Image (cartoon, rainbow, N blue to C red; front, side, top):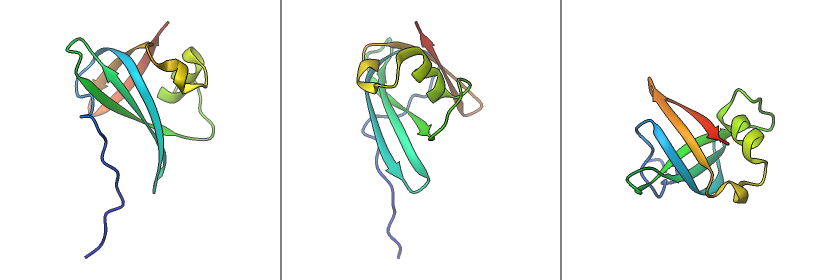
Amino acid sequence: MSKLNVKVVPNPLVNESGLYTIKGVKTAPTKFGSMMAIRVSGKSQEEKSILVPVFPKVTNQTNLGKLVEAFGDETDKWVGKRINITIENNRSTIEPIT
């Protein structure tokens, strides 16, 4: 028997497109690299999470790059900011609302 090397995300994952407000950001290492869990709430006010991979270098074409370009690199300052999440073919795209 082998041990799983996983972490449970505290909130359900975002599963529909729409406008969301960022409630918190947490980065954690995984065996595949760092992953950012962004806690958000939408019109139902239910908190959900969206996972974003963290790479040492990003472009403004990636979800992380778009967020950093719009909101800065201090994730504590992202709380309260609005984002539009589009989910299509099991892929999510994040567009910051500035």
